[in-house]
Image (cartoon, rainbow, N blue to C red):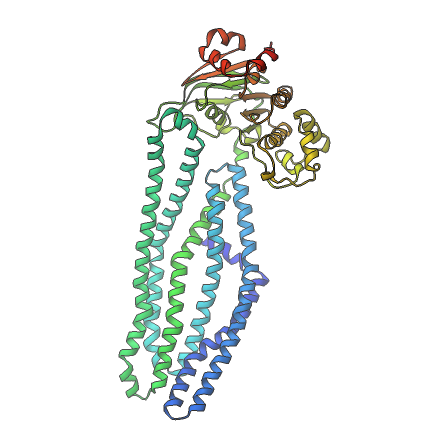
Length: 559
């Protein structure tokens, strides 16, 4: 907790925090005055001095206007204080995600950063308001009647301290809630990415069970948080309502000892208008927002502090691929999508993977690229386990290519930021995206992803992958929206680029351009050339019959 509090204190060490504190001072005056003003106005009215009572109320209104002016300035300074903190957290989360490949980074960026930003802003406001109210009320009560302060302050502090004692229990509940949120995000992401394989293998019930457990865990964590909220209600009853009841019960005794009716009413006003709302707000902030701030920030800073994964991963000397007994299933009770696959792809080789839709081709691509962990067996890239290989050695282009809002150049050199203009132009010419770049307005033109067709997005992603330093390229139906000629040019460019190329084939032409073809049939696989598979693989013969025969006649088998 010291680290998280220290991070917040560090964020407060700037000119905006000082300005916020200075503009809080005008609010102390109306807080200190309103109880006294009510007391004096009430006594004046009861004594028949109406104008004197009105003057006291007028003074109260004037001080309230002064406090409102200060509050208006406070919110402006708050934005200057909070937004830099959010920007710093976003940089930390994105940097950690790029280094570690953490699948829970999406939950951290989409939800947890916003939790820290919002709760930090709320805590600043609440603590500031609580301090202003407490100082003002104490000053007012002591100037009004010290005896009333003796009845009000002890139960108020008792309730406040009791709420602090509940924070330890509440912290555990918040941590459980955040962990359940991340577990659910990770499980749902894994399930959605394998929906085609789940449908193909009939494992919908297992997928439902797999996602159901984190959903139930998250629901249980939220119910536990609700029980902690009930305990805070008890603490508020002690600190917020007990002073009021005690003061009412002691009223006759106080009046008998010279305390006026107006003074007693002023004390009640301080409790109802000042202490009770302030205690309710600060308890809610510390017991809910405060814990969320500490626990959530702890998770962000802990992940950010993990050593750079690139320092622990290895860059293989070459990009050959070998699998030994590779088996993968979406859960322990599910049928394997890939079962005992032994495969060798030499450095610089071009392999096409074919098979019916949903048979597991994308699953194999995910295993090769280290996005999935094998159930059994292993994948070796250059003799190094795929999970230990640096992500920079592989580039995977899926069917739905990713293009972001930025310049054409920023989209193309994303994987090689220091690429020279000549290198970028060479990649454009090789892949065949020159006409698209010209249509968009050149390398410095802004890209609007929603204005591009699926094929145009694929061309940009293919050029980006070609330009990358990755020696292993995996194209998972990455040319399916291109016409046959554009697809041929792109695949031939990658085949002559150097390094190893894996193509999840969409057309027979893609398969025939490869030196080796892997036919996936259920959880079995057959490796061969186009000619050998025509005689040995009935599935390959059937697949070729579904592809365009005219296209087949135009493509000569690779030697």
